[in-house]
Length: 192
Image (cartoon, rainbow, N blue to C red):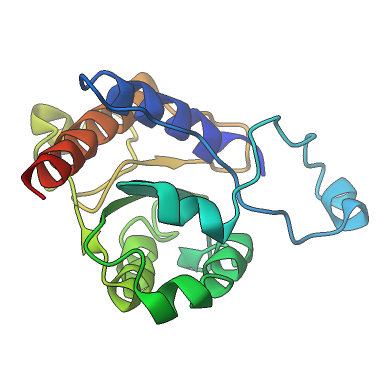
């Protein structure tokens, strides 16, 4: 809503595109809130990133899904999108495809680990292969001198009241996640 997930997504896309032979695309899910409600929330206009459809998922070799957190879980907008993928589930068109997760939360106790944990169920029902970053980001995973979102599940940021944007360290972790998962996706596709 305020651009935090999009900022991380842009870095993830750069990281994925840095892997030779990988094409990365950025999409957003449809908005479910009315313009009236968005206005009351002082939400800025939506970006010009294309709106994804379930059919678009079937065309991809791998995914890195990002979403804001609502009460420790993915936002309703993203859940509504995944709920529309029943046809893909029925035919298992996403089975065996690697998928990662990244997120934005409002606070340190706002779901940096519960959000990806609850989102993994969506991947599992589709038969996707969850690819966490673990501690592959190295020393950045252990940073204690500054506020840093993210976890072994994936890149993350703290939005606070909406005014805090992702830090350089959080953006670096997002770039790493894009590169890491793109590399794994490429290896799996090549091996198939």
